[in-house]
Length: 354
Image (cartoon, rainbow, N blue to C red; front, side):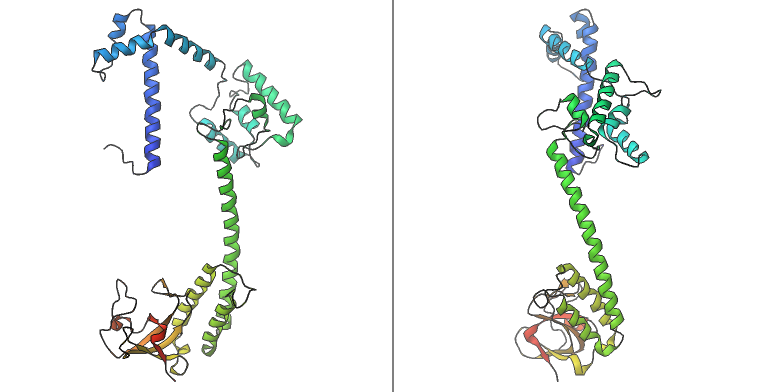
């Protein structure tokens, strides 16, 4: 294929463009047909992509009939009443975007309409446009608070009051297919994003402050573990309701401070955390010796949440090589492969040594 259209929105956009081009080509063809004096010359105008003479004859008869001519003249009169704009190929959206860049405050619909219906010399495109611009400016003076910006949809906007031509469910001056409900959804989305960004900034500052306290307090290796578990308990709402931070904050602190503890081997001593790992299959044999690290369900082992009824332990010595891990990964499957690192183990299969 000539174009690669993987996404649904790409296919929709491409089909809409094809439909626009097809309608435009058909309109030009109908204009040529109506200029010819007789059916003989019209039949000779058949495009090469239409192979059937009968289909082309039917098309010519339909587009040159009196019924079609009446309908065509009706819509031609409607188009004459429309006010031409000076956006050229740039369109309203890009013109308004350029105006917003040069303006310290959001551009209103009145300002956008006036800008797009004036020539380069500052004169209106025609007399009808001059009258509309004058009425809009009068309404803007009478109701200065009603001049909503182009980012909002306001029924009291002077443009909506003057024209009052909105179709049911449609929004004036917001391009084809845009409804008031769509604009409301977009506004709600933008407001939610702004609130989430503000909340993220606050939480980020809180995390930075907590981690700073952790690193400042944990200067002595003998108190690193005590400080770590004190912070975790303080952040647990069941224990201390003063700290009601989201779980992601607690998870982040566990993960970051676990890395800090791993780099400080002096904090792990046989007197404090020594333990034996029993065979998780139920044989009761000691498969390895290590050091207890954490029982917090929120901390991670090999990027996986520890969860309940489990312990995070540091493996020092293997007693039974070839023993399969309780939670194997793609890279790690036996106890031999995790010596010198942490591993998840069932809580009832970890025996603390005195």
